[in-house]
Length: 111
Length: 116
Image 1 (tube, each protein chain N blue to C red):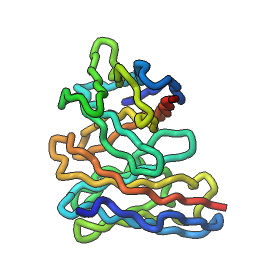
Image 2: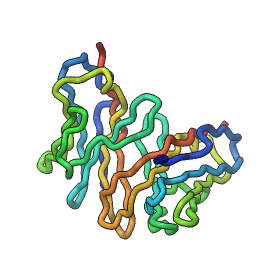
Image 3: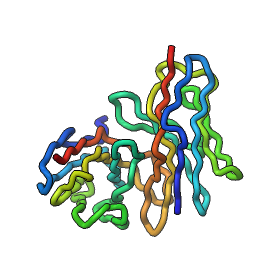
Image 4: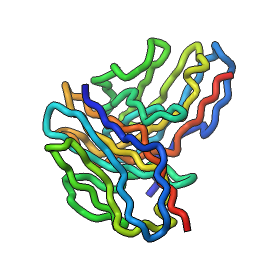
């Protein structure tokens, strides 16, 4: 079955430290992966997607098919990065489309 | 323009009662999704609409759950005979047509349902 695993429920770092939020997936086809973020009292929003290969707010994520991973990285964390981060995998099957989400990692950036 | 809106924002109900949750997608978005977020869990897919039709209802947890979409716009998620385990935040999202998959999903603020 398709699955997304985020092993860390909470990741706490100091401002300026590097950040890596882990995401592993299992998928039988060619995966399409996303990172969504939810800031305090805001709605869930797309941060980045692997097909875009872009950096958003200093974050990058590289799809590693060998390790089935899509870890989110930022070299220097900022306090405003504190939020809940969800890794997601899209599934398109039998005319149906959905996102399969991991359980999320709360990032806390301390001053 | 306006984003996805959901109502009510909060709903407290007694066990056994029926509830109806509403979602207004972004104008022009043909695809609509319902997800459920339980405490400590990720987001769980419930149902997907393309236009008014729902090709995949497999995510609905039980036959107490149903959803409909009319006019290719507003959707309602109905939970009959609510149980305490139905307590969660129910999120709605919409996107442009998903033929081939991959369009960004825009999420609403959610409805927090509490079943006493």
